[in-house]
Image 1 (tube, rainbow, N blue to C red):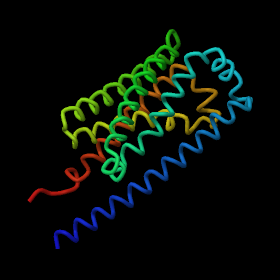
Image 2 (spheres, helix red, strand yellow):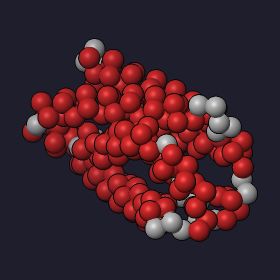
Image 3 (cartoon, rainbow, N blue to C red):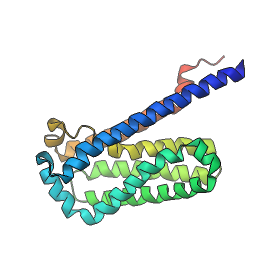
Image 4 (cartoon, one colour):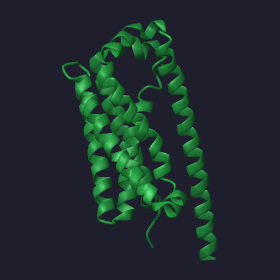
Length: 211
């Protein structure tokens, strides 16, 4: 009876993970089309931002490249099947993820230096580095359960690079928010992502009455 219950729970978890990754993938595709593709095609609402991107291209290229690597590496790092069958690859990809996070975070701070949005970027970068460093240290210490939890937190911050752009096509959000409020919005997205993760990680304790 207990084993069948575990199988049901495992099946439910697998189904939830599949739906979650599909949702995150579709969200990423939506943001790519509405932000990056329209930016390249010089969409009128993004024209001023496009000029800024061109001016910042030397820092923006490594920042974007490392962010994309971290974003794509995450799903593979969470695959239990891949981890069991190709442990060396998992570890190597984990190191690449850590390096990408540090380069992406530091170049992000450099890009925002002297601009009103810098506080938001610094909070995002600090959360990214702290969570990723904790994930790396717990992996080195063989605290695998804790390592997975910190990786979930780290990837939640990684995904704020997508989630914070979901509303870009909304003129009120993009054109009238202002740099200061945009920085506040980035902080809110980062903290909200971490809060959602904490609720998910502790859901069983929150919803189960101890006998």
